[in-house]
Length: 206
Length: 265
Image (cartoon, rainbow over all chains, first blue to last red; front, side):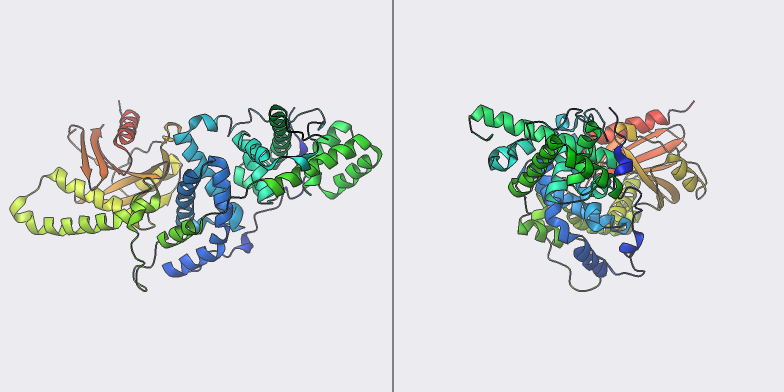
């Protein structure tokens, strides 16, 4: 089923607000440029790290990727348009992808294409049940176990509280795809936590 | 509104991303469909569970400090930040290379002066001179922010730009399908003539491909200078010199691709 839901979503023809970030002043010295970068971009350092950590699933790799990505962001600082946070996260996300492609190519399978784009047609059934009783550890493992393209939209939505529009910009997909991936991510997550709970024998369902 | 559509829109609804008209329509549907309301409640609960229980990984403070310190500082305004030699460790990171390039560049500069002074006595071979020239050009370009004069991944933009400024038309190949992304081109002066520099990228590595017309086809040759890999070959009346911190085997790949692309008639 292809998704034609874009038309019902907010923000979808919102142009990039060029005016929101003033472009680099003329004759800016290097130290002024660095200060501007520190004020606009570095406040999102934790978000950058959180995304990299969830995508690489490893502390050391996340550190390497983030420092590389932020320095890269600094090099391309003049290209900043609109809000700094999605701009930075898009760079971090691409650095993660490049890093994964080089180091763990198996994990990037299906990341860029729409191979698993189908929206479940049945309604969200009883597998999404009593989420408030989810065991914290199991929930985290289940998120880490999601395919990367679903993991990233879930992290960006729930942990970074970003709009579909910003997520679309970061993941470089249409806004309707953000919605379908998010729906898929939540469904997979619920199924996965329930399966883990059944295996361990923990009682999560009421 | 069908149940199927309503279910599909629930995610956008709980995320506050549904447009106002559809929101009203969905809410009317929710009001008369208990199973949909239940599904909606479960979704909200799941969303909330992730927000509350999923780990948020804050960056270690030292990491941010390290990155902050590595942002290129002012060369002529205030004291330079202390060099962070520990940056040498994470191989592959741009900053590590950049920090490491500075002494390399100084060395290259000193070497160049030494060479000029010694010219009369030693007369290094032309290849040695070109090796130094291309390396110096590569280091200068990657140290500063001016890696290219024309930024484009489109060979049909880069080639005319270069051709318009040179007495020859350099072959410009789009090799992105093979993992070498064309990012732009610039002009430089090597071996007493203006040359074209095609700038490629592979992961975070910048590769400069220097191109100029050459009469004789010399044998392919590789060099290593200050940790940079340099590779030279000639095809179809053009000399190619590649310079990068990229691994030798990958630079070989690029050389092979460029040679194939410029095999000529």
